[in-house]
Amino acid sequence: MSEPRQRLLDAAVDHLAAHGLSDLSLRQLAAALGTSHRMLIYHFGSKEGLLVEVIRAVERRQREAFAGLGPDEAVSPGDAIRRMWRRFADPALAPHERLFFEVYGQALQGRTHALPLLEGIVESWLEPAVRFARDRGVPEEVARADARLGVAVMRGLLLDLLATGDRQGVDAAAERFAAAYETLTAR
Image (cartoon, rainbow, N blue to C red; front, side, top):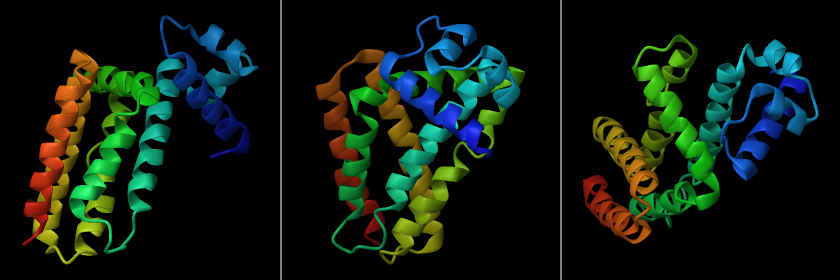
């Protein structure tokens, strides 16, 4: 990725995290980033293309945080789930998560601008989770199935939190999953 494109993307991620999307036009976003809407179009093709890249950047940061847990035996699978849940459920990430689900829904409906988001949307999360489990002695086929389950549950819990705002109820469900995940991976 070119340096100017990366700078614009980083600035967009930061701006959208701080201010959300609301009904932000590409021109308004460009002004807030100190650039022109034409530069955003040049680097990202459209507002929708920029939003897809913002989601990918945020997801990449989340995956890197998960992968950063490494093979440290002191971090159990359940503790890893708890850490990731605290990170994902951070209210500061809510605007990005709403954007994720909005664009994800558009991609599932076949809307062309959002389809690139589907590329690797699950698979990109599987490898770090499989590596994490393998580092703890979990067989490959079990690690792969558990990783997919983990991605599905975490996304479901996030959607529940965003839709209901029931922090206490969703946190309790996340804790139950973390406890259950300990037994899933202890094979």
